Image 1 (cartoon, rainbow over the protein chains, first blue to last red):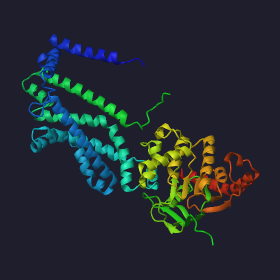
Image 2: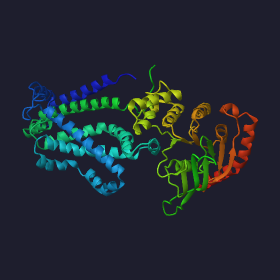
Image 3: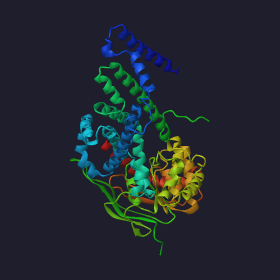
Image 4: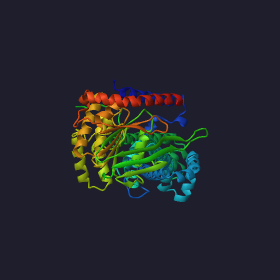
Length: 265
Length: 271
């Protein structure tokens, strides 16, 4: 197949040109739709001034992008660990699973964003309220995948491990956990994305730092170009995260069969 | 006085509880007695769906019988049969572990050091003709290779009893005969007690010291036992051509044919 990326770049340029043309000519009012060049200028300014990527040990001066990144990573790690632990526990304990089933369903179907005000009250306007929101989003994805992963363990593999002398702990370590992790990895894209959503939405709803905060500030002064600039940065950042996940996935799931995979001699 | 048998199933019955309103309890095995002497290779043949695997699961301790007793070297079995290795019909390798890791896992479960476990694993991989393939994951191996890994995984534990549930049924004929010969060679080295489940009478005769024929299900029970007096060592491909093999085959098949027909009719009824 011919490489598609030139077309993808072209499509991007066309869309960007369309935006530029429509707002410059006034067909779309620039007050509501912003002006792409000014938005890009804003992006440049933010990075140039160090607002985005400044290293600092103080939460007041550290770059906004770092704040969002730290929140995302913390939410992802904590949410994944909790999801793994609770998922394994519920999958292996039918009583607990039956008892908690309605609560799990209720908690999952509830729109988690409404918890943001409560987290703000509990954890303040610092990073932890955003991390908490991200954790509630990541947790359920990981939890359901782990639960499924444990339930789908082949009974033959399980019986085989038992016949080979596996204790309950061995089974957890060498059968349930690897099976569950493979499911967690397959949902990695979604859960990293959710951690990111939690961080940004949390920031947007009340914060003092972070990319979401920048968007909120711009919106407050009707600086629509600032809002678009924030969106551009978030999008690029999300793409970078997704790429990292893909790389990690490729390394960690070597045992998984890929369709039509052959080995070069 | 004879020595204590390696494995004795005494008056085993297995009834599965009914699920759902209109289902009746299903008796898979009824009042079955089966004794495997030390170092004896016994094949159990029977029509499809007759409860052969159920019987083997009882012997392995994976399934508790509804009635009867399992004795392993004279001792009543409670829980898993720790003296037995089990070779499953389906793929039982852990897909997330390489061949080496799969073979070593049983020893690691039993607290062997990593160096020791992997040394033995490599040795067994070599014995089943897979040295150099240890780093591969199960999905990178062919069906025959997977079976070899599974065989190594079981035999590395040096079980005194080997339970095999149609282990080669998924293989093509050539690979299968190779595997059967390899199995016989490995077995003749230390003469474990083997229970070999199969639906293939030729395979049963070629491999065994004794063939037990089961009736059609439900409520399976043994209906015939035949000592196989063919000389060892055997080549499974060649022995099929000897007159004595043909004679034995005809004799056992005469007994089996009715049951196979019954099993067929039974399966038609259910469907």
